[in-house]
Length: 190
Image (cartoon, rainbow, N blue to C red; front, side):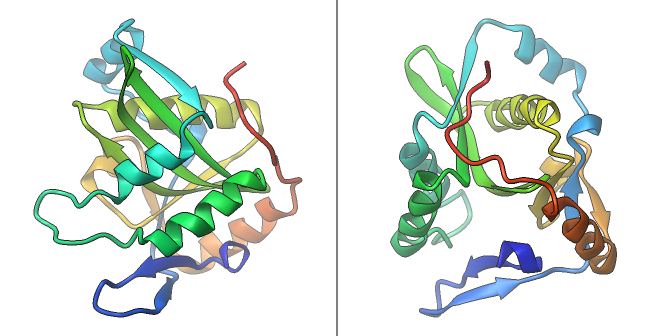
């Protein structure tokens, strides 16, 4: 599905998983991520530590928790099982943000070729998901991954430098970047 430019979305009113390819598509260039002064201060602070691929299941669980103002979640148990299988195969990855021993933010997604498909993020403390995305972007730059597919627009993502690509441009870029080798396996920040 990802290779065709579509991603899963679950409508809680239905049993079936729906497949989406929005126009436009919201993306981030890891080379161009925007870091505000307040976020830069958080990134320099020893308050947070960041790991990758150490608590995939917990990150998915936190992302699946209902958000303020919403009743359910698209991240059903069936979806969790599918992404855990992708994680075990080395395609799905999580970024974990810690304060002391507490998981306070993170994200997960799928890596194929020169792309990272961001699926969901969460924050239990201000800017913790932004810290995760910035650290992920730093790692992606070292691995030659040129685009983060954010899928759907949000003010949160725009504040970090996300921009919209028309679907045709996204699909063209997708095909170019999928020609690169996959970076399977467990990742780390070393």
